[in-house]
Structures are given as C-alpha cells and as structure tokens.
Length: 395
Image 1 (cartoon, helix red, strand yellow):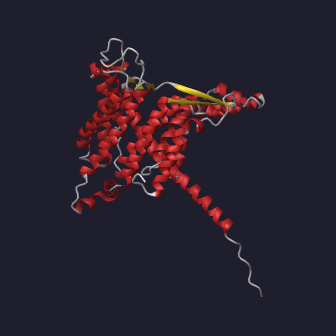
Image 2 (image 1 turned 90 degrees about the vertical axis):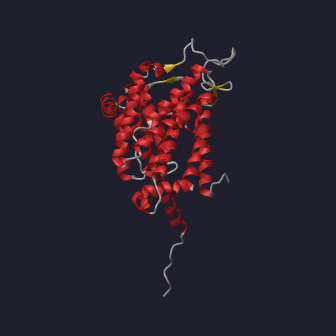
Image 3 (image 1 turned 180 degrees about the vertical axis):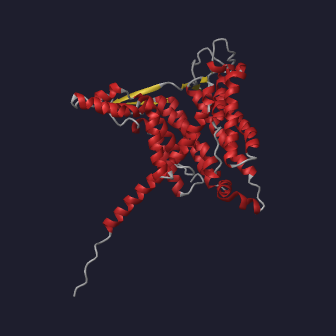
C-alpha cells in the first residue's frame, strides 16, 4: 500500500494517528489541576512539534544516511522564512504562494553551499557548513538589510504592495480563507482541548514529508547513501562516484529545512536573522542524535522531546514549585525548592544537558533504542509467562 511494506505502513499509520490526535494526547491533565503545567496541547507548541519534526527529518536524511554532519542547516531555515514573508509583502497572506518558493530557494541555496562543502568530508565538511551558516547570518543581520530588514526582522507593513490582497481577505496567514491562528476549543469535563487550523496544516504536511522520507530510506538512492556512510572509499573503488549522491542528499535535506522555515513564517508572519544562527543548527543535531540518527522515528521523537523541555520546563518557576510542595513543612519546602531551582526556568538547559548525556551514554541509538529495549523486555516477559514450567521426570 502506497509503495510501503507492512512494517513501514504500520509506522505511517501510527504517526498519522498520533499527529491527528495530538490535542488529546498532549493534554493529559485537567485544566485546573497543578499538573496542568505539563500539558503541551496549546497551538504554538503543537505547531513547533510538527515544524521542527520536519526540520529534523530532513537533517536525518543527510546525517543519518550519509554520515555527513552539517552545522549550517539553520541557513536554509532562515531562507525559507524570508521567502514566505516576501510573498506576504508582494502578493497576499495566502501561504500557498510562499511555501513552494521557500522549498525552491532553499534548494538552490543548498545546492550552492553543498557544491563547495561536499569537496571535503568529516570535520572539514562540518566546519565549512558552519562557516557558510554564520556568513548567511551576518549577511541577513547587517549587510542585506534592504532584503532582510536587518536586526528588526522582515515583516508585513500597510504600505506593502500585496497585489492579490482582497477587500475581505484575512489580514493574517491563511490557506484560501482558512486562517492559521484560528482555533476551536472543546471542553470535556475538567479538560479543555484546542483544535488549531495552523497545527493541522503543519501536521498534514509533516505526515506527507514523513511518508516521503520512508520512500527515500527504502529506495535504491537511500541504499546508496547508506553505502556511502558505511565505506565511501570502497564504494569509490567500485567505480561509483559518491559525490552526486551526497550532494543530492544535501539539497533534499536543505529543502526540508526551507519548508520548515516557511511553515514558521506561515504561523507567525515574521522572519528574523536569529533563525540562521549556529545555535539553531546545533539544536537540530541534538534532536536527531537524541531521538536516534538513521532511524525513521528518531528525529521526530527528538524534536518533540527538546521542544517540550524548552517550552514546559522553562516556564516552571519558584512560585510553581512552592505551590507543588506547599504540603511540606516550611523549612523542608524551601530546601526542596532550592534543590530543584537550578534545573527549571532559565536553567532548563542544564536538565536537557543531563538527559542528553544519559541518553548518549546508556542509549547510543537514542530514544528509539530505548523503546526497542522496552519492547524486547516486554516480549521476553510474555514469552516466559507463556512457556509451561518443566516437570521433573518420574522415577
């Protein structure tokens, strides 16, 4: 079905169900409970789950399959955002014009950078991509200000042409009238679930690009990329030139990043140079490694994991902690808050760093490996229970 085997089709169905039911899954706690702090079913965060999942899936096609570690993918993220906002300024707020342009422009940009960077491998390739990304950031921040609007960021103004803008058209990003920031809230008992147009738009695109990544993984092209990662020198000795394949993987990966950047601008009509900083490139590397490089689900899990920590743990403060531990005696309550304080709020990076260190140390295959170990343990336990006990032979 859809050119997939049974295992891949099952994985795609699971991802589709999880994506479409995210408003329920990410809101497990009642709205008025103390644990509602850990709910993640609000539009902005759900959109980021989907968008950065796309970003990580694309990066995994390069790093996970070929082994080429790029530290410059944030440049394509920024190019995609600028492309979409320029379409807002020139045409109208319909996202249908900007997203194809974001994919094309980021692909061309990736082709130029990849053509130069792919002449080297290993750490030299990584340094080259990092250099290009920082050059792009500086150009966007202080040199190409007529195009990028510098440090202020590119946004839509009342005097922009917007030649296709209709009199009754929404003044925010939309898809043929379906406004991205519009939401419907449904209350079920003590729970409240938010269904956002922008999230489902991003979610459907994420499902489609996930399906495309499966087809790439299972294709002869994907096998060639894995062969390059395994032993590029031996492959060259067989008479095959690996460079066109690695360059194609770099361009496809850059187009994924451009699409993610375009979706960021589709949710919020603003593009800034900060999206092109090296920290954004490092973040997608962490997402892929944390989830499981070279696996289909790993980048998605890693993106969700990091974005959850960034948006949930960073909002926990001392007031929230005191409310949680108010049942303790005053002295003990203050001591517990003192111990936890460095790991929440602005210190959420410390918590993430510790978790990342533990995952890399004990689960080299990332979160996917952890899931596989748990599944294998459950399977062994079930087999042990189903195996009849051996009886002693009669004398």
